[in-house]
Each structure stands twice: as C-alpha cells, then as structure tokens.
Image (cartoon, rainbow, N blue to C red; front, side, top):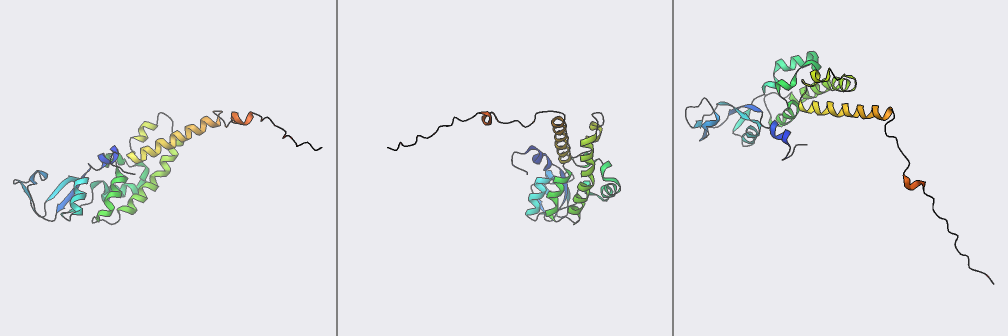
Length: 194
C-alpha cells in the first residue's frame, strides 16, 4: 500500500508522463523545454512527472497520454511470451504506475486488463524460478523483473529456503517447558465429623 514515507511510491511518481495541456498556463514555461516564453500554450505536449500530471489532470488542465511502457509493441511482446519481456527497462514500477494511470481515463481503456494479463503470464514463471533456479541463473533472471515482481520473487525464494531448512531437520515444534512441569496436588481437608 503506498504511503507518504514509502520510497518506492515516491520514485514511482517521478516517472515521466506525456500530457497535453487543455488550457494555457502562464508562468510555467519551464515545464515546456521548447517554449520560448514563460507560458505553456493550449495543446502543448509536455513530459511531466506523474505526481504533477495527476494533480493537473484532477484540475482538468491536462489530458494524460498513454505512457510508452504500455505501447502496442510492449503488448505484442507480452502476448508472445510474457516471461521473456524485460519490463524493468520499460518501467521499474510497471504495475504500480499502470494501476495509478487506469483511473485517469487515458485514451486506452484496456490498460487494466493488460496489466492483469501481463502479471498472470509472468507470475507462474516467477514462482517456478524462485523454487527451482540455481544461484547462477538468479541474477540473470531477476534483472528483467519490475520492483513488484522482485519483491514477490524474493519472498517466494525465502519461503522455499525456510521450507527446505525445516524439512531437512531444522527447528521443529517443541513442547513448551511449562507443560513439562507437574502441579502439586493438594487434597482438600475434609471437615471432620464427630
């Protein structure tokens, strides 16, 4: 869950997104490197960090274009063989960015289903490699994974290592020491009858 202090969320929101200004903006010419004035004209296409693009979108000042990492070329590659596509090069926070772009009503309405297809296609391979990959092949495989996939891969790998350790005689369940002690039984004193 993203949070104010989550460094991954902060870095993800720095991803550049192409936007088209729906209104002219005065005094923000620095945002448009091609602008000769200190203004951004209506219809100007500018790359902005996601956090700024999202805020401007909420104020209906810009429309957000589909990011390059969700292009048709990437979709065709994932449809061909999802496990072999290097998503880290396209966007290290591929899934998280996609989930934040979907509510922005970009021109492409199929990003949500595409994210689902990409994740389910890669999920099986990630779990399979995490359980069976040798130490030599792990670095080559993990360089293609996004941040979210890397966390999933490491969690599955550590879980499998803990299971193997337990299975080979690691720490077993033991009886608590308190259960081994016996209580002193006291016989209640019966009242004497005369």
